Image (cartoon, rainbow, N blue to C red):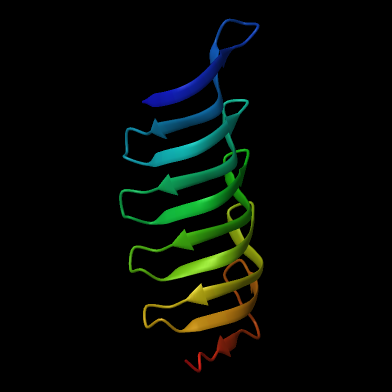
Amino acid sequence: MTEGDCIQTELGSLERNGQGTHTSVSGIVYEGSWANDNMNGKGKLTHPSNAVYEGDFVNNQFHGHGKYTWPDGSYYVGTFVENRLEGEGEFYDTEGQIWTGAFRFRAAPGLKFKLNMN
């Protein structure tokens, strides 16, 4: 189900463009910007598991700066490239500890623990 801005193409079909919300049959909800019938721009994608991505989208992929929250409450804030954690970022674990550094998809060599002295 889709609610929001659409345009009619030259072939007569409707494309999502502008702001809108789409809910898939499986319960995934996207709220945000659309261009050329794809998630493009700023948005929020919520899965039925309560995993959430908020940030930049390019052609239906996490791409740019964003925040991904896992169902256990841990989260990553930083750079994404084609749905992958890629570049500088911070990971906040379930204990509230912060790990910072360069992320390379499933690896994060040289992460540093960020000490909070408050």
